[in-house]
Length: 282
Image (cartoon, rainbow, N blue to C red; front, side):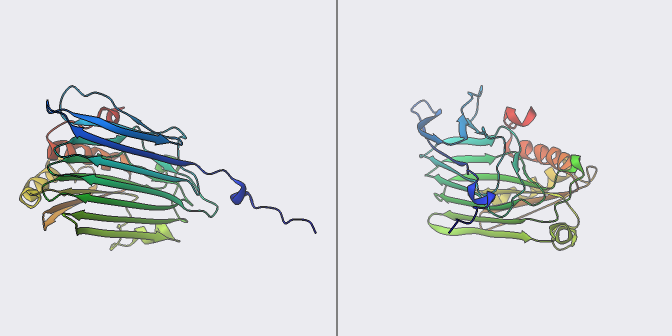
């Protein structure tokens, strides 16, 4: 009896990328790599900034992520380490014919460590299917600044994301206790759901800035001032900030990623008091 043909979706080779980085503060005060593992198309570049924290730049040599690919990033910061993690460019999630792409990030911050997670935007093509998990386990006095931007469809191509699926789950623990939990899900008729005022009010780009630190709540007025000085209204970007339980959250919505990215860059630079990584400017 002849075998049934294997569907193309099952025959296709999947990309599996993994990066694990460990850093520590040296006696002189600088943060340096203590361990690094890489596999698949995911790589890490370590430029040496003139001053400030250590920088690590994630590079996907595959040029994008296709259906069924799996990528994981792990970072561990020893006591007092200071690190910025970013990406070389926007990450593209291509259309899927069924399988779900999986991206997972796991961060560990020991006492007094500071991490800024500042990737460039993630672009979801029409039909993309993405499940993303973000987890952090941090000491009570550690500092974590997270920025993530999502784009639904390629505006330059006139693309509207109608079909596909997104699950974006964040779980952050401080001193062993759950401090922040957020899960965002979208599937089918995505553009119609984004048009709802309670969801995105028609925005096709959205971003979240989340800051966890002992002094996070005291910086709420600063964050709101930065929204005004960043020119959000003139850029047609909606933004708002709130703070509670040692956390500060700022959210942005825009019709396109260009104005939203510009507003976010101004806010991030003002909030952190230093320029964004150089790759953001290329």
